[in-house]
Length: 232
DNA sequence: GCGACAG
DNA sequence: ATCTTGTCGC
Image (cartoon, rainbow, N blue to C red; front, side, top):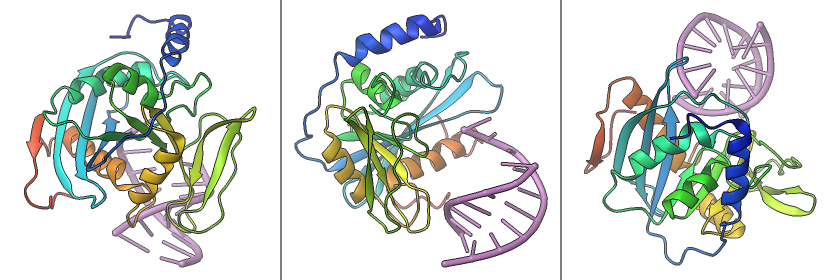
């Protein structure tokens, strides 16, 4: 979908899309999605997955898996052009969309406010949150060393996101709104998604699921989960 | 088992 | 993003 885009064209599209960003709270949340991509090094096949959990219980209810071919290279700041097409393809497989989706990338915590989470949200028109393991942009400040501690990430007085400590003595994760939610609500939601691991449940489970898919242990398509998955 | 930090 | 071996600490 974006394979022929030059970096110049990609930059222009990001600037264009960022004008559509809207920040408003999600009214009621009973389900939350987690999305992730996995691929083999030097392969053009992307394995995309979205898991759906009950909120705030964090119980896996269903998941969707799909593959997508792309040759767009990894370029910091332009990851969306590699991943978004695959995400849209899995997204289409889901009959009952979750109220909000968490992606393991940045949202508006991005030089042009167009991280993958924001990019995906603009195209899917669904509320999203970015929850990345590493910061891409902005003034990094570390939160205090206790669970739920936060620090604001800013860029020339703009609030771009938060560093959130999900576990004591572990590096924080970086939370930012994608689109159709607010910075404060994104942070609040992510705090409610923290289990016993550094990575909050939606993206943690999405990562495990999509890896199992890449390794041939799960099948393509949409699947409902009626009992706890023992695969992990 | 899990995560930070090698490399 | 993935793979691989190992150490230390909790």
